[in-house]
Length: 320
Image (cartoon, rainbow, N blue to C red):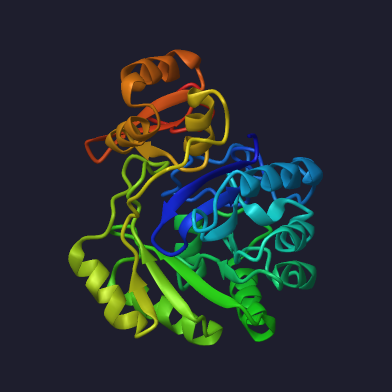
């Protein structure tokens, strides 16, 4: 499948069937911690990047191929910014017409200042936007946004969406050591969250390969401080463990590529997944994956990760 992947394990969403409505890496942010590498170039154009009908055909196939209980959520999560797809509202409505499963949208939240964007996301059961900074300077440093998506617009959009939205609003805060894990940074984020009134705040760490080699997760003290300052609705979200579903395509290599394009995997994680789906062919599949030209190995934190070959990590692709 080209646009639907998984289910993949999620701490918050259980076994999540992913829908990717934009090509790698179509985004209006260029976050220093992004596991999909840098955004080249930044774009803030909303259009139908991939045919919406083709996406829904794959959703129908995926739902039909899984038994009850094998999927907990259907999640729209892009290889970039999900809401840049101009038919995101239509996609949510179509998915909800196909299944009673709850629908989540993972987004950076940068376009929520647009009334039409807020309306399109209103039917989702959960929306998970990002807020990594409490001021414009730090926002520019961490998220490196397109000039049109200012911090003022981000915050105004989140506040306006909360006032209108009846579903679960879970705001994500990604902690980067030395940037937004200080007491002052946490206090500024907490002040912004008091304006937004989300249902939950999810405190995350960059545990997968960040775009920039210097990015490090916050230490335990930083996480505890964030949890204390952000209040009772703050939850520290640890990396998920569980089974990745590789049954979406006949070719095992293509199924792996479908996952790592959106969700880079640790090598040990990939090996365990391959043992489950193809016990006798782990080494063969890894060799085929390496020779295919569709994947690359990224080393971060002393760990090998497998990611899609088009993803741009500067230390690996200095000439690009």
